[in-house]
Image (cartoon, rainbow over all chains, first blue to last red; front, side, top):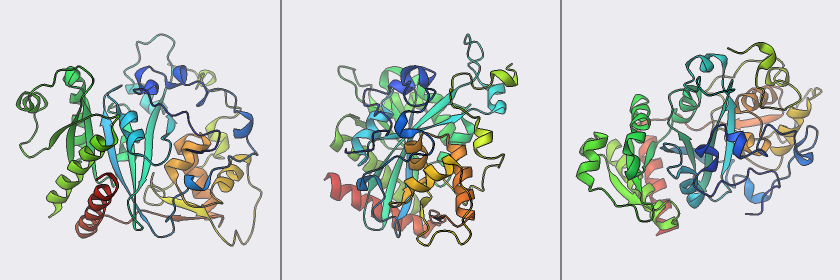
Length: 237
Length: 125
C-alpha cells in the first residue's frame, strides 16, 4: 500500500505489539519517541487518496471485532482482510485503570498503553466495514466499551493449543452481549482438536459456529468472517 | 503508586495529553464513536479561531476526504481520547463535519448484514 510514511508499522508477523508488553518496547517508533520530523506538531501527514473512505459521504460504517488472546493472530487476520495497511491506536491507561491493573507485580511498570489494531474493507457503495482487534483483557474496559458499542458481532480467534487463554476473551464478549463465532487459527503442524472437545472446553452454545482458518490466507479468513456474518443474519431473522 | 511527576514515564511527548486537550473532557459517545466518519467542512468555520498545532494536524489530515475517528488516531498517533476531544472541539467550531454510524435497529441490521455478506462473497468468492 502506498501510504504516508508515518502510517503505523504493519505488525504482519504474529502480533509483535501484543506479544510483549508494553507495546512501546517492541515498536519504539509508534509512540514514546520524540515525534519523527514528518509527524511533528505543525506539519501534517500526507495521506494517499486510497487512505480515505471513498464513499464516506454516504456510506454506513459498521464494525466487527476480531478478538483473542495475545499472539493468536488477530493482527495477521486483520491485515489479510483489510484494504488498508492495518493501523493501531494506543490509549494511555487512566489512573482508575491502574488500580485494577494486573501488571502490578511487573518491575518498574507504572503505566501502560494498549494497542488496538484495525483495518478497513469497502463492502459496497453503501457500507464500509471496519475490523477491530484487541486482546481480551478485563483491564482495558474503556477500550472494550468503545469497540463493543454498536459492533455487529465478534470473531473469536482461538489457538487450539492454548484454549484456556481464550476463556477471558469469551467472558468479555458475553459480558457485552455480542454474538460471536469461533475461528480456530490453524497454525502449521498444530494438531486440531476435534470440534466436540473444543466446544466442551469453551462451553459453547450448540448453535455457535466453529470454523478453522489460516489467518494468513485471504480466502480462509474471509470464509471465517462470512460464517460469522451468516450466523449474525440468522440471529436477526 | 505513582506520583504525578512520574506519570507516563515511557512517553517522551513534549506535553501531557491534558494540555493538548486544554482540559476538555471526553465527548459524548453518540457524537464520536470509533467509526464515526469525519471530514473537513467544505466552507470552513464562520469565525476561525487560532488552532493548536495538534488541532491543525487533525484538520489537515481530514481535508482530503473521509476518515473514521479510529483511522485519524492511527495516522496521527495521538491517543484516542485526545483525538476524540480535539475532533469534537473542531466540529463544534465549524471546522469539521461528522457522520455518526446509523443507530442500530433490527431492520437496519438485517439489511446491513445482508449487504456485508454479499460484499464478502463478491470480494473473496
